[in-house]
Length: 220
Ligand code: ATP
Image 1: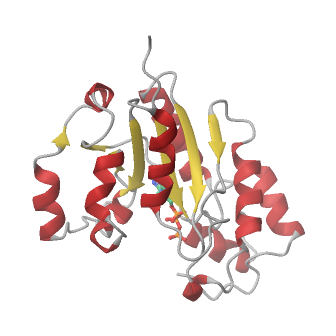
Image 2: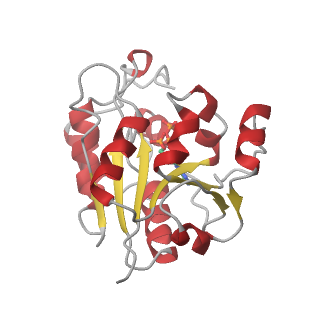
């Protein structure tokens, strides 16, 4: 029986942009037959203004993913009481997946912050970790404890992730899309075009709901 791989990309998605979607497409090509799900996180209090509400971020995710076969979004973290952790999300997927491979995907900027995440070492008990190089060429320093912890788990080839349910770490460089949600919010607030950064339906949604107009980047 073929192995079913589930890929999970967490993020704020404020808003979802072509860097997310095109990276997701490239990842699903790397793992033929895989399913991929985008999971928006709750917004920490310091990011609330001028960001979109959780419901608006989820609406935009749905619009951005609607025409991509195999790509879904899941609002499981938004509905949770209290804090909402990646650990709990991956535990939920693991419960329904049996021994099939689960791959949590993150950009290299998120990877270097991993030691501040809830139960970060236990994430590998539930899932593999796949780190995508983030465009921009910045060399991000890995904290020493992360480097040491990751050393014995690293594999070079993404195919190796198919051989186990969880526990491995792989770094990949996909086609690079040099766009961030910060740049999108800034462009909208300056009245500049976001045509090359967003799905047209997401751009329409932002205009209709007058999002990010007074962005002063406190959200970052
Ligand atoms: P912000 O600029 O507000 O920080 P962002 O563009 O980084 O937002 P997030 O929602 O925080 O978007 O990103 C979710 C995940 O996707 C993170 O792991 C991030 O590293 C990754 N990611 C975001 N943009 C890209 C991109 N252009 N290429 C590759 N990975 C990306």
